Amino acid sequence: MSTFVIVGASVAGGLAAETLRKEGFDGRVVLVGAEPVRPYERPPLSKEYQWGTRSEESVFLKPPGFYEEQGIELLTGRDAVSLDTRSRRVSLADGSRIGYDRLLIATGASPRRLAVPGADLEGVLYLRTLEDARALRERISGSSRVVVVGAGFIGAEVAASCRRAGLEVVMLEVLPVPLQRALGPRVGQVYADMHRAHGVDLRTGEGVAELRGHGRVERVVTTSGHVFDCDFVVVGIGVAPETRWLEGSGVEVHNGVVVDELCRASAPDVYAAGDVASWWHPGFGERLRVEHFDNAQSQGVAAARSMLDKEIPYAPVPFFWSDQYEVSLQYVGHASGEDPVVFRGDPGSGSWSAFYLRDGWLRAALGVNRFRDVSAARRLIAAHVSVEPEKLADEGFDLKTLAREVARSR
Image (tube, rainbow, N blue to C red; front, side, top):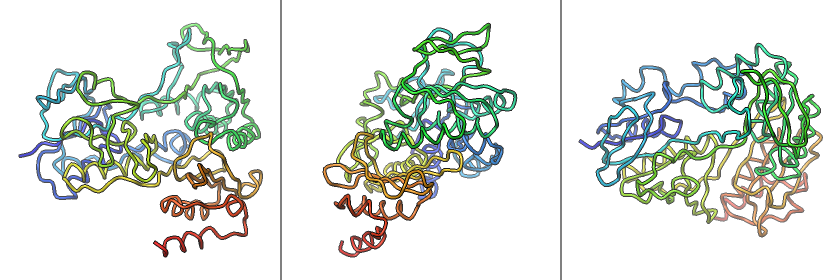
């Protein structure tokens, strides 16, 4: 009987295990997770879970008995420490080893740590796991002042959740605007204005020099010398793919586990999916590593099918969303914050879109409370078509009709 091992009881790993059973695999399935809980969704942890509109139980992918019912061996609280691709064994921190016929790596990513004096003080929080989210919710409910370090998606969403709860929020960002790497300077400025309008003391071009306190963090000293008192600190300065346990395994790693469009790694019968996977996208003609929920769930399914020799190239139009205050953003495609951007609608109106171009091609689009544009753009990006910037900017030009025409012509 074949044994398929999945390391990482994440969204990608959990859905891969589920897909193996749905697709008819009747061999042994072992799902190994470092956390002491079954697979769950991460997006609510910075938003609805903090607001109290999502319960803890609601974030889990499946009810408690699902994995046993499906014959999936769920091993929680078990860290993988090494991989031997020659003997086809995964070693765990408790000294046990698991043999595999095929292996899926779905270990996700870990938060980058703040490396300044005082970073180890109590009250310095990161948000990645359910345990982290519990600690954050407890702090929010009993505090009045917070410093958020980093204005990427996690930092910006946490800042918005803290303001919603009535806390005084200082947000520090070393770049000129929030979300600059992902969305570029022009869109980032819109978000800077939004956070400030909601009462966030946003300091850009500002890093952290030191954290001070007696046993717990009490103040933050910035690189320009400003000092901010606080009850706690939340750090959101990015993540790194969790590949340390693969050192010496022979699996190629470069900004994640390197895989092809079928999620296959460099070692035989080894696959990867989710935040940890750097995969070749045949449509975009480049290697991507996407740290968002939609990719994790879709690639987990795709990897499971590849493990069953159902070889369908994984080439989606990436998608993610972010809710901050009353503003809901949806983004499709893949672009750099440095790519030229075209706006449709007034960013100050609460309903607008932005389109990212590269070499004349539509690469990505975002919509703020304007989801028709996002839906049409997704079709256009998938079709790899060139659209004149003037048409993208013209609110009278029907993108949906153009998308239909492109689809009919193919």
